Image 1 (tube, protein in one colour):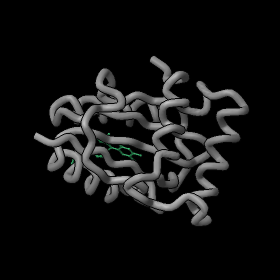
Image 2 (cartoon, helix red, strand yellow):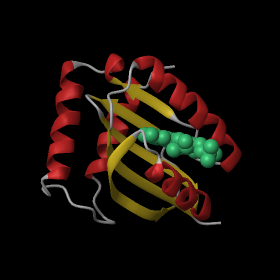
Image 3 (cartoon, rainbow, N blue to C red):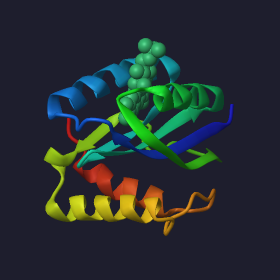
Image 4 (tube, rainbow, N blue to C red):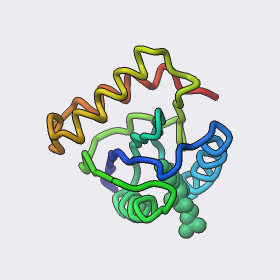
Length: 143
Ligand SMILES: Cc1cc2nc3c(=O)[nH]c(=O)nc-3n(C[C@H](O)[C@H](O)[C@H](O)COP(=O)(O)O)c2cc1C
């Protein structure tokens, strides 16, 4: 079965507290374990970046659920592509939030969001910029 990866950014309607984030990810992990989905969620200053990866139908179905979630809006898909391997095979959903990030990470995160929103970084199947960002942030994923 081909593996699929989907990456998007979005904005919280109301900023999440660390407790709300922890709860969201706790639920997401349960849902993802059932679906065979793995990935990483980054959150800073009201913005999300999330990668979900797994079997194509599972990823698409989850993405449309997430997109419809009223806790966030301005959902912008950046990547949706077939892949040979999972980037985060061990995480049903890793979380890196502001509390885990250095000032540099937060600045990089915010520049990335601005670049996407302004069109400087565009959705492209070959664009590796978002993936590189995720891999750099993987080092600060909390428990
Ligand atoms: C930013 C964000 C990321 C989310 N990520 C996931 C996820 O990775 N997996 C998941 O099952 N739900 C995730 N959710 C929650 C879903 O939107 C939805 O509430 C959840 O799948 C439960 O849906 P259900 O009750 O219809 O099964 C996320 C929600 C938000 C706002």
